Length: 431
Ligand code: EPZ
Image (cartoon, rainbow, N blue to C red; front, top):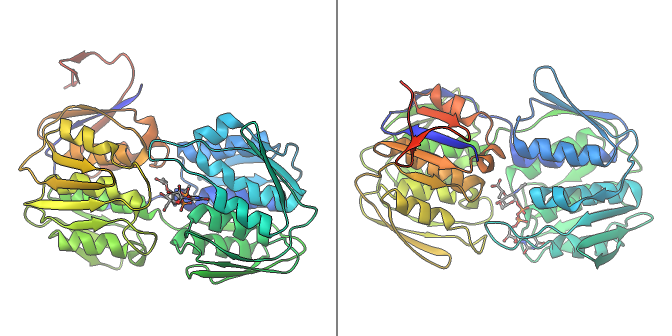
């Protein structure tokens, strides 16, 4: 299993370029299935989830290719297969987002039911209920969802919960439906606004993304489009916290401040300075972080995808903090690993009490999922001594060249593979 070796204590400083948003690009790749014309996603992030989505799209018989300069080209001239296989859906839950597009274009789709994952059971009943309202006949058997509809019909859909994926799946399906669809209590994430922009560039007629009510007027067909996704606000937030935890001074060159308002507010509450500059966001650490109360919420509330990383910061705060996770049922596994580094954290269900300690100490820890892994890397950057974060394949799902980009800010961090000689649990660091 690949790991990341870190020697903590280095202050991060400099300029950091944020990659394109994983949680925007994955959906745009799915949306490209709805036209036989080529689509180009400019500077798509070279991360494992994008590779997995490309593998799924190739499995559907569609051309996907990286172009020089890092652009991703998808050309669904025809769709040869209508099935998203179990091994790919299990590997990446976002695979279910091909359901709406393939059903809308082909009138039929078969998708393996996504299992749960490290952060909790992740059902898709909101996706299915919405598609049924649009006239799809949906059956579930032997772990697969089968959906059929000669042509989807516009409907007025109210989501019980502002699910990001359900909003996106239904939004995409509705672009080719007959008539108008309204999605109420829709998710409001910035990536959904970006998806609306991409769909409209393809000739769709979508409005209201970013609000709780999204209106889609169905059209007869869509064309190809070129688009560059918004910067990844979670990557940006992760690095903002790295700057604060290491006493650093980092400018996130292309971050979009309004996408990070909740994170910025909490970092300021914890004593950091966050300034909007002409280049993006500049983060400078204050004295020892102050404790805060954190409660994750759907956007524009504090993002669940930043909860593990912020907990790593609070482990060093001057006092006790409370973190409440309201989006997932078990997104606290990183607390066990932070404790191995000396953190004082008590978890009760979806609530964690973090009593700040003066310093963390390096250890061999293991990532359970993408953002937990990121949190452990942050802890390693701030800890005394050496840390190895195992299971770095989780982090590679959503962060492009994170070690390279952090080294450029002064971090002592490098990837280690199997077979690296280790003594007392830590790799024998080369000179
Ligand atoms: C997206 O997942 C993101 N993934 C997640 O980011 C993010 O944590 C999540 O939105 C919330 O912001 C992508 O965009 C690829 P949801 P998604 O549907 O769409 C429950 C990361 O780290 N739910 O808003 O799956 C669900 O179980 C990943 O980049 C239902 O109960 O999120 C969860 O508890 C992790 N029924 C909650 O809603 C449904 O039909 C939020 O899920 C759908 C969802």
